[in-house]
Image 1 (tube, rainbow, N blue to C red):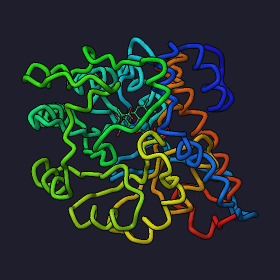
Image 2: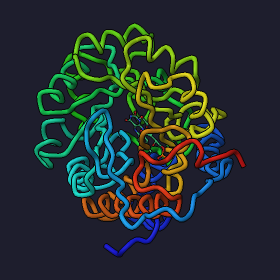
Image 3: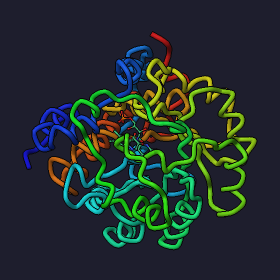
Image 4: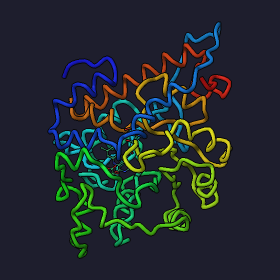
Amino acid sequence: METLLTLDDAERLAEHATTPEAWSYIVGGAGDERTLRWNREAFSKFRLRYRVLVDVSSVSTETTVLGTPVSMPVLVAPMAFHQIAHEEGELATAKGAAQAGTLMCVSTVATATPADIVAAAPDAPRWLQIYVFQDRGVSDEVIAQALESGFTALVLTADLPVYGIRHREARTGFEAPEDAVPAIVAARERGAEHGGHHSLDVDLLESSLEWDYVSELVERWKVPVLVKGLVTAEDAILACEHGAAGVVVSNHGGRQLDGAIASLEALPEVVEAVGDRAEIYLDGGVRRGSDVVMALALGARAVLVGRPVMHGLALGGATGVAQVLEILREETENALALLGCRSPGEVTAAHVKPA
Ligand code: FNR
Ligand code: LAC
């Protein structure tokens, strides 16, 4: 594959490396795609206050996430169906993330089992994203297998009680590769009916979940639980009260409620409400190292990136994923140095102000 300079390069080139159907699913947002745009635009609503004459001859992007060491404050966001981008699917993503030294959050609706993903890159850190099937046994089996294979945390996605309205997918007629999704195959084997009118067969998923499910997860599985997909202080406080070890400030990459607040704009209120009771993560629209440090300055411990990873995967499998992540790592290192910081831990609220 050709060498990429920026994440935007990867996006531009990846369009030609995928089918129109897969592309519509990957890049699309909900409704008029306002939130999708706002996620990106929000990074122009704050300005970095950099400090000078700091010895930055040695800068490291390394940090920890829930105690796990990673090469940079950038993780791979959970995304469904990696096989639509590359035949090796999640196995390639896992290898690419491992090569870049960072953590992959694996989707419940991955096109590979947790055990196979671990086998592809055994020594890399991993979290499991959870969607709860109406047949709870399906989710429990995925969780049990992931934890046995060495996954270290559960990330409950809370912003998909129903599927967003996604016109791009509808127009191309994208269909999920459901037969290649072990969790969906298991749900069928256990008698679930095919609902079939969305790309993700969300009729299989539970739309009645409430906060007590977070405490249930915490008590049952005895690993840290994060709640992903909240954008308010109110919900962040509830997450803490129900035992969450972390929250991911996210609007699902603009794929769910159109008109929802940009994730970066929601970050300050969550940071203020949570304090040091839980680790705070952010995703949505992160495309530059300068975005990463801005999120850190606003109080995130790390960010997750979604679509750019799919773009890298489509372009070059594991190598493409590693290249995209390495671009972000190098840009983050550069931004840290120019901000006057030697490590992510040195970035503070004083490094940012509203535009
Ligand atoms: C997602 N996202 C997602 N989230 C989740 O919790 N479980 C999932 O299975 C998926 N699937 C999924 C598929 C695709 C193709 C995309 C693009 C996104 C949302 C994802 O985790 C994350 O919140 C956003 O992608 C972040 O925004 P950016 O980085 O794509 O702008
Ligand atoms: C999506 C679901 C699967 O955003 O999370 O497409």
